[in-house]
Amino acid sequence: MFMLALYRRILGHPFVYDQVRPRVVGGIDMRPLYDLLPVEARASVLDVGCGTGDALRYLDRFESYLGVDTDQVAIEAAKNRWGHLPNVRFEQRTLRAEDVADLSPTGVILSGVLHHLTNAEADGVLRLAASSPRLVRIVTSDIVFLPGKLFNNVMAMMDRGRFCRDPDAYASLARRAGLTVEQGMTIGSSPTSDRVRYHLMALSVPNASVDGHGGRQ
Image 1 (cartoon, rainbow, N blue to C red):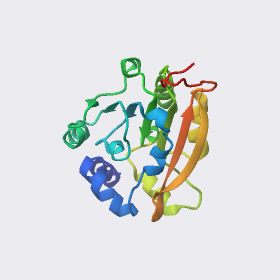
Image 2: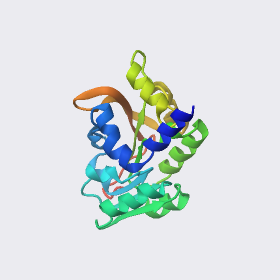
Image 3: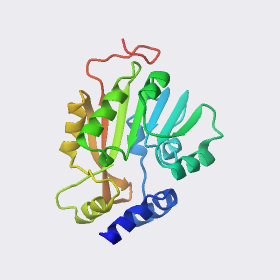
Image 4: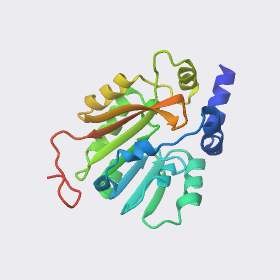
């Protein structure tokens, strides 16, 4: 247990997560996640659990971006890395209702978040994200338990997140929060490696149409 706790603590350091872990798992490329965000969802982006701001490697043409994370080291790294960009902000804290009210995001990113949350916590975060009147889509990515994938499942068990689920359980979280699962897919960590896999979801609010200005009608 001590060694597992130590591993999780080391893995949590931004340098290790960004630079070392990709080498262990054969590379990490999250482009498929951000491909699930259509252009109209990229106007105003809320990145929950933003870490070092890695989403900005994949995003462009956004009007505003807010990244929130509770990890001070990660947020400082994000500011050093991306703080020079216009209309980009990072805050060290948990997500607040005011963030959604003030930013009114069209796209919400929950990358590597749900497997850190209990069912009740995940429900609260998803419902809060879905309360944006301009919301077009929420996208999520998480480690996942898969039958017969021993290396993947061992890595998932060693992750700092204590609530790794299978694909059906992730979809159930979204539906319990009143969201529609538009797409769900499991991908390898990179185009050249599937030793570790991630489950992606594209979520929307049922019966919500979007006007030409990125707002719901």
